[in-house]
Image (cartoon, rainbow over all chains, first blue to last red; front, side, top):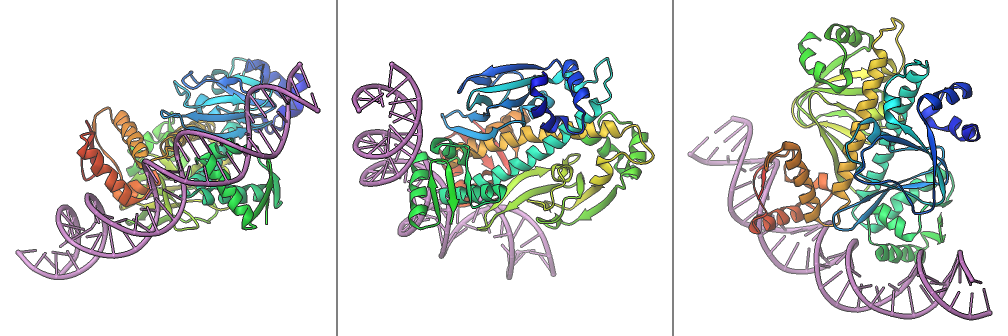
Length: 219
Length: 219
DNA sequence: GTTCGTCTGTTGAATTTTCAACAAAAGGAG
DNA sequence: CTCCTTTTGTTGAAAATTCAACAGACGAAC
């Protein structure tokens, strides 16, 4: 596990926990690491939610596939972020989402039963872990509000602009890369891909933005 | 505070905490109760998020108002549920939502600084409180996924049917009441009110559902 | 460099939503 | 009971989205 220490130390789940304690905790938590190739399923919709995932390298997408074949991308998770923790903590009997590797990725999996209940060794940092988990879940909720802020807009143009302005704000620059190709961006914004492409072209002609591939610039 | 004990005992924030301890904690937490008339603002968008709210009686709506005047209803909170806890825990500098009383309501407010940090008296149940908060936030995230599952549908009909089927499932019956009037339902589903009314009429003519006011029946 | 598969932008038609306006129905106040 | 306000359903026109199909651009593999 030592090779992952630098990522894990930055993981919100292990904030304010020393590296030594961290290594000991990983043992208690029964942590294991799995590798996934691009497009492989890390967690499948419908499966019981028993694991908390941590992205050690690469990245994963949280995806919801509905009844009518619409795909919604809920978020992209990059190191050292956590995923599926909400379902694991809520002990959801069936995952409502699928987690897919967006590129070759290494994922650490923690059995939530070990996380939620103090272990026999009574590691003193368990309380800190719960606190961190709480903080992390609070932040996730805030991010969800952002997503709803974007997708609650009524038109493709408004959704796109809301998303891009948020990205620019986070990057602190007018130029920034997005983690999506066009189809993925459409699935994230919950709009039609061709309509999205048309809208991007229009905004480009209007001089509102420039873009090449994944890099956008607001003008 | 004693008068609120029965509600508070059922509140997810105080699960597995005895009534005596609860009363003592409320002191430590600096709990106070405020009353709001219908349509009054409990928390305003843009304000710093310092309080966790608990609905003691009545109900509140969590609302997001965007740039273009669109109103989105994120959720309805009824006793003994909690609200704004995510923003308080994440220490968001500005609330992204407004909380409005949906009817005359009594609200308990907890200063999040007291919740997040162990008090000097070191009440032993603080850890339990954090744990409960974590559980609650996990459940909230799951509910958010449901909301996205509904609003990510592309047509008014699909959104409505997804919502109603979920409500029927939760009620365990084909007949159930919804906490919205037509305008509010439209704002929750993120669609146009008149279009929603038209769609309901259509579904009624098709024999898919029946409804009178707030009561719906799936056929 | 060529080939193949994928991604992207474009277009037009069909569908759907939004918007504005109005009338009927329902509810509350006096 | 009557008046007044709010809510709900209806309609038609305008705007936007979705859908399907296609061609060019791009990248990867050989």
